[in-house]
Image 1 (cartoon, one colour):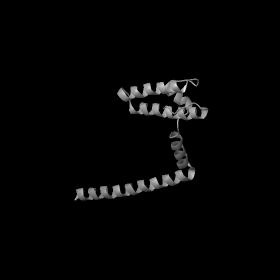
Image 2 (cartoon, helix red, strand yellow; image 1 turned 45 degrees about the vertical axis):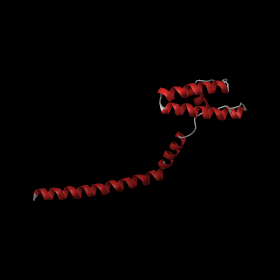
Image 3 (tube, rainbow, N blue to C red; image 1 turned 180 degrees about the vertical axis):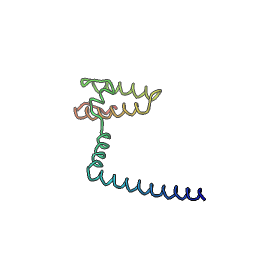
Image 4 (cartoon, rainbow, N blue to C red; image 1 turned 90 degrees about the vertical axis):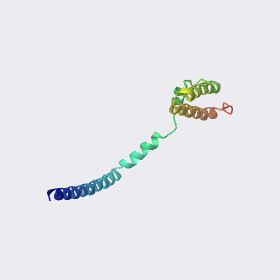
Length: 116
């Protein structure tokens, strides 16, 4: 008899607790929408997904602003192959994105990038 009462209390208590959690979550979402936290979070996510800067790309490839496109391609090929053999896919993709970024910069300067 006592076990049945205890089981009923546990079931009813967990149901009440579940409803309270759902209601609190809905209220938190409403408060976030009112205060602008949701929009700020979306902006931070968008900001994080932007293309890298040319200075960051130069640091990744180890080149300077005076480096020629041929030097950049040489560094790119070397780093890309090293990471393909025994490096990480993450570093390899960073090297590739750095080359893509600098490719855009050098196209604007008027240097040839067609041999990439």
